[in-house]
Image (cartoon, rainbow, N blue to C red):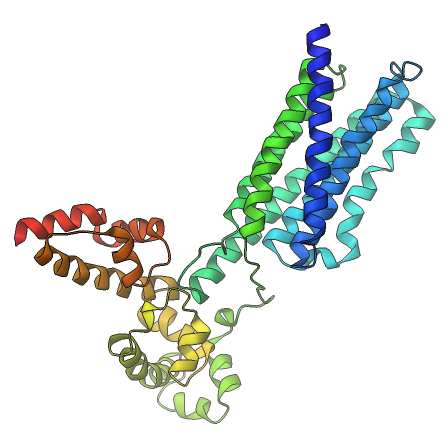
Length: 376
């Protein structure tokens, strides 16, 4: 028992220092983006949450059941503050609304209710309410993470440091953290070992979250993606005089699609085959549209409706074919260098190169190179 209590105090002290140091560090990064600002607020709240538990070191209040329950409800409110961070990560600027900050504040309503009634059902209701809000947060981040992924597919040729998959994984882990909290400080009472494990679990999870958040590049996604606009609306909005001409032959979308295909296809083929735009590892839909003298709406409609591919797949298919030609060149010299092939073909990471090459060709780059050697 003495060992478990000492371990709990040690881990609580480590957690206090952990979140204090991260709060100091993130203070300097809070102006980089709103996401980092919310991350800073979250780490400060977690620091205060662990620090307040030091009150129980005083013998006069160490065994106060009322204070213990009030502190537990405060912990739940702190956990809900972190939910705002996940919301901000998958949907930039979502925390600008004051309404979203009412989530953690609403949890505090259970404190005066408990002080009046001092019954266990109030505490259980507070736990249930927090759990439901955490579930709602996961649903929220799943929806917006998918929307974010679709937007990246349509507008970027590389997803490194842009994807919010880490936020989705973090949200699920956070639910596990809540489960750990229930086990450590549940309604049956806390255990020293449970407190120690909970402190360790929090530090591990937030180490993972903070390191991934630091390298994340925020992408602002419009409320209504231009790709979702009706085709007729897209044509008329971009070039008003073109809509009647594009629809002259038919009343359906085929006239508009034909108009867009004839305008985009020759220029795009020229830029890809001769200009080799795909060799730019940071190529975006906007860059390509500017290069061919068009706009992102027309280009997006051409790729999605005429070719049936996303911008991401369209560009990376060119890169894979370029990699294949580089492999054939390397066969002649009898050497192979995967990072070089990845870089020369336009990929900005070897991992993405390996993954996408296998997706297109059905075998790993090294296996493709071996097959080239056999066919020589």
